[in-house]
Image (cartoon, rainbow over all chains, first blue to last red; front, side, top):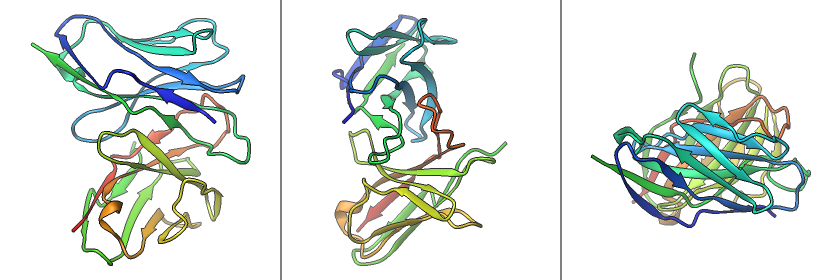
Amino acid sequence: AQKITQTQPGMFVQEKEAVTLDCTYDTSDQSYGLFWYKQPSSGEMIFLIYQGSYDEQNATEGRYSLNFQKARKSANLVISASQLGDSAMYFCAMRGPYSGGGADGLTFGKGTHLIIQP
Amino acid sequence: NAGVMQNPRHLVRRRGQEARLRCSPMKGHSHVYWYRQLPEEGLKFMVYLQKENIIDESGMPKERFSAEFPKEGPSILRIQQVVRGDSAAYFCASSFGTGDTYEKLFFGSGTQLSVL
């Protein structure tokens, strides 16, 4: 079974500072994908970034980067130069290979509520 | 370039009534997933469907809940005889269904179900 742990229920960060949101995972699969989604107060789930388990380089998407440490089973999201609009819930998620007996979808962590202060 | 469309955005039902939640996947996507989000929680998988076929319903409660994805029209999540504990945000996601572990799921804006 897959499990995602996000240990920071909430974070306050000053605008323009860099932010690191923690995510650790547990899986017995060799091949898997790690995802980060943003959920603003309006409720929609917005895809931010993904990292494949076999990717050797950390993923980057604009101001988002994923600090992937496979041996430690961590996939932290880094947001550079935070903005007020970054205030939202952030969810880490994992997807493994479809085994036929489990969910072919995403397993989510409980999320981190990020608040950017001016 | 419409994304995943869910309606209604908000749904209020009294205990014992039926709730029907609709989801139209992104153009070209043939796989649909339903998730439920309780307050202060992440999304929990409910069911995974292809057109006219349920692939995996391991996250679906055994009673009162059903889902379908007909050949024509949106996917429907149906909750019969709703109870207060069914109050949650229900999200639909879609994908091409390649089975690739790196395949992104695209989410709709969700339906907030409130049971009075």
